[in-house]
Length: 295
Length: 330
Image (cartoon, rainbow over all chains, first blue to last red; front, top):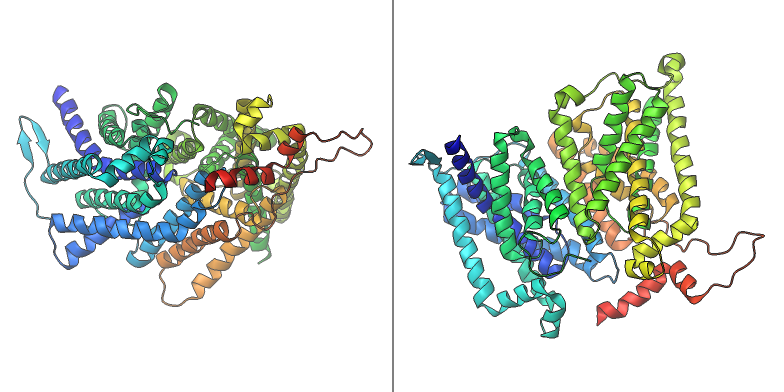
């Protein structure tokens, strides 16, 4: 029983580490641009397909595959944002954020169906070397899980450095923390929007590729994970970057540990309940220090 | 062919009810419901399950609408202190939860096999005339809902909810019970969606989780925006237009040679999604622009001079745009 619990927690942490990347992307975009970009789900799938193509056609190994996933999802994310969402954001309206969010849902659907048109609905597997599970004590960890965890940690580390050391990174954190104060200091959120979208969608692409390497990729890969990513972001406070990572780990562990009590099909229901629970107990998120989400 | 047309018209009536619900919540109330399909499914399953116990269908429809409406109140209450984005996420998640429950709770919903043999009023008695009868029933509901909403939105409640939509703080300062108004509005909108679900269940006599995909929510958003998302008449015209578009793309996509079934389906969904994006860009007000509902007093009643505050609340749209534009530009 105890070992089973530890195993589930380990699985949950690995899953959470991977979810953390798209959750971070969603949070970054929301913080800097001020709206929820639902098309992040499609960009996860796009990243996964881009990685799958170079992996199966050109036989590229893991790390270059992830770089391709990052760049392709990031570029397509910025391009689709410029075409479909950016013109909407310029309209003066009290409901700009909601209108853009709705358009981003339509964009998500359009991208998903474009993928389905091109690749069909079937499941596509990566060609990755198969290796034995690592056994520590009686806890089993798959090699892919180790890779995922390691890569998620490296990416998080690079991002942390980017946000603490570079000027642009600090500006983004400032906007996320307090948009008004950031403007007073001469930071223009609009100028950061392309970069924030590129990084955010790129992270979604890596996350999608990692999850797809573990299982397989099909046009709904991202859409299936949308709720759990939102729940990681909301648990973390929706504007807190470190909160998104912690939220993802928490939601990942909660979703895995819940398997002790409920069937696996309800894992995304756990994500929904986590959102409700956080909103009831601490609406600004468990890890958010600053305002920005309250009205 | 006739039965196909009748079925499509009936479906347009059901979409109209959902669009009316969305117009109430979104166009008039300024809140967003991205889980329309969840409320639709709740109404459908509630009405279908209750009708199996022998309760008259009129009552089960009301019950389905009530359950959906109460869920709507709960979800909008939970997100009350937060930006509207949270309500969007929570309603989206709710729809997903409902789909999971419908797929997995076999004892209640029949799982992915669905519920079959759902009763429909007077089906045996009317025989082949039943589809025509049901068409009238659905459009009677849609017409009644449209009429009731038109009157309601002209009433003081309607003006108050538009004031809340445009600026909650101003409305609160003017003494409006903001939370209560929002909950009421969300209740009305989700109850209409639930009613549409019930009517759908008794129309097709078979419901399954496959019928409640998120795509339906997009259809209704397209219907509401195409018609004009703040307008009652827009909801109905938009729903008819969406059904025509949906069926039209079915024929067009089937006519393109060399496409397999998956490609045909994905092309139709792509067209719908792009259609919504294009309309939101080019003509977000839809076919019927938002107007300031008549501020003229009823004929015969004493004419009141409109004070500044009254006018500013009534001319909500323009006043708000004018007020917001310079702030954004700054």
